[in-house]
Amino acid sequence: MPAGKIAGEAGTSPTPLALPIRLGGVAGLAAAAVSLGLILRPGGESTALAATLAALPLVLLVLWLAALCAYQASALGRLGSAGGWAAALGVALIAVFNLLRAASQPAPGGPLARLLGSTPVVIAVTVTIMLLMWGILALGTASLRAGILPRASVVLWMAGIAANLLTTWVPAGLTAIVGVVWSSVALLLARRPAHPMEDGGTPVAPGATARLLPLDALRGTIMALMAIDHASLFVRRWHPFETWDQPLPDYPSLAAMITRLATHPCAPGFFFLMGAGMLLFLQARRGAGWSDRRIFGHLALRGLLFILLEQVVVDVATGGRVGPWDFSILAGLGGVMLLGIPILRLSGKAQALGGAAIILGMQVLPGWLSHTDLGALSPIRLLLLPGSVGPAYVLYPPLPWLGVALLGMAFAGALQSNPGRAYRLALVGGVASLALFVVLRSLGGFGNLRMPPGDSLIDFLNLVKYPPSLTFLLLTLGFDLVLLNFYARAARLLATLGRPLVTLGQAALYFFLVHWFVYAAMGMIYRTPGDLPATYLVWIIGLVSLYPICKAYEAFKHRMPAASVWRMI
Image (cartoon, rainbow, N blue to C red):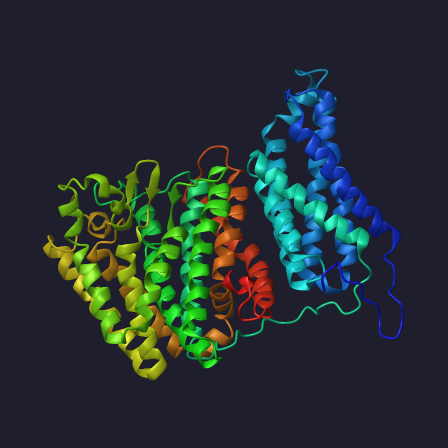
């Protein structure tokens, strides 16, 4: 229930909130005011007074967090309660560190200053930031699910505080301040909620029948694999790019190469499943009485939302600020969704032929464009090839990946008419793709975009991804299709041990957005680049900590109306 509404128990007058909760709202407003003053103050020198003032809003935020938890106590569930405790503890510990730092200012070289700069204390502070990051995400997600506070206010303080832990970018701090003020006002004006949402299990999305669970499981699998790449980015400070016009990466070991190879099925899987999801959405909403115009408008809005989220969430988490001219995977998905909307009305055969034609055409187009001066039409390159044109940089140009999405649409059409036959077709197509990969990679030439630099296994598996070469797609989509068939045959496994993969698949975009913050926070503990074992340890810890958060969000979004923007995330 929105906090602005007055809710009372049946047959009684509205019950006022307890005084401590009101005081928590006042503390939130005071914390916001002090934080705003720190942001706007001239200078920024590190003095004892400045360090003390920096600790003040943190102390007030502890009271604010306690009030949030108390106000929503009956609806937060175990995840929200744990998140509230973790966030409050994290904020309190950081406040203590700031106060100790203030005490050390009069003697910069003294014992206390040396202690605060020691490696164990720096690691402890980093672990505290990790704890606070998880707590804020868990409490915020549980608050969204509870539906008691204004949801927009929850998103603002959750995203703002999380971003502020990773960057000193002023808009991140202002976002957190707005969210804290909004929720604090809600605490001061609201009455006690009478019927909070109960913490239930994870409902199955409308239309998510057994025939579609393999798609969710595959999506969840590639989300988990994708996280290896980003754990490596924050722990090892290394992320290779297999571009068509640059030498292929030089891997230090087979283990490092396999680590990268394990993540390659992710991008093709994203685009394939998005194409399938678009067609399934079209059919489901037609069955619910939606007009095509309304369906296409909904899909267009979601495509634009993808591009926006790339700029305001992913760029902030990875680069510390909005990058309006940098477009990566999420923007590529949004662009493909926009381009694919008119193609939804074509037959499955036309979609399959169109997708194959685009993929084959992209095997010759890069070479042709590299010797062609497009002049004033050069911005078109951003739709066709990765790279820069002026200030804009594109990593996933939409046209090459549209071919993969069209294959997904064709598969979804087959799935609608005959699920068993469609999954058998996935197995045949997957095995054939893997076999053809071996042939084309061995022969060289067409379909490789770049020949192996040597004769080792690493060289053989080192493929061009940007834009996707035919050999890259044969290997990765082949793997995806075989795995999809396996999940279709393992219904009992998906209902038990595989349920976490289904959950991640049904909350895929939310996982994508929040995992950047969690892995970035965990990566802060490595003051120098870590190794592969550390990467895998951080990867596993991140997945385990993110699973309950994504499960809570999945339960929340499936309670929202079909046209709600929350269902798009």
